[in-house]
Image 1 (spheres, rainbow, N blue to C red):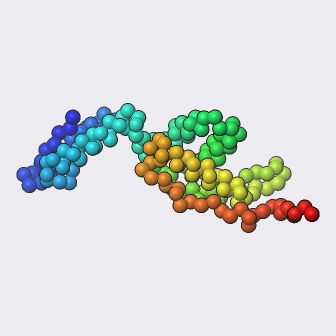
Image 2: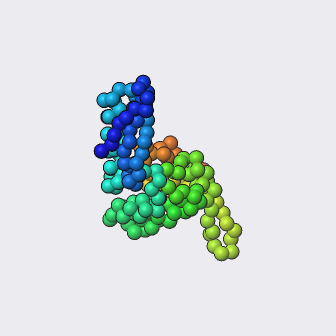
Image 3: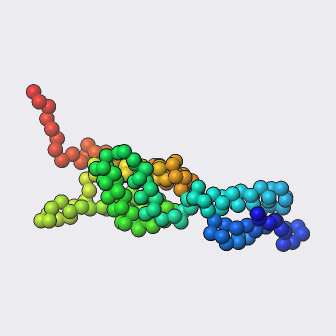
Length: 180
């Protein structure tokens, strides 16, 4: 249970409570009304309690732990799809150096996917991903962040909501003709 106090007679109330890691935290509630300050303090305590019991994930939670949980949540989906998602997500996380959930952002994701390359054969040079492959990477990372937001509640909002897949038709390698 937290405590409320004032430092000066006409100042704001301060709340002292225990956070998720067990440390005592002192914060200004920003109000001079005791009932409002108590409501704010109870909300902070509730959030800390939820985080302590694993109900809420903070932005400091590692991406690796949540990636493994996401792959397990894919459940009965095809192994080929699950392995492809894991490979794509690990490549993006390594390229962007995302370690914590709070580091995920749209600008880095888009620039990373545009710069990703692959080795076709040992003899051919390294080439950039085609537009269709970039779309697969975008789909994998967007589904992961949607899962983080909607299912795991690790993020307050989807950070990649405005990210769009590129138009595939501009990058067609083989254009088939109609059979007569």
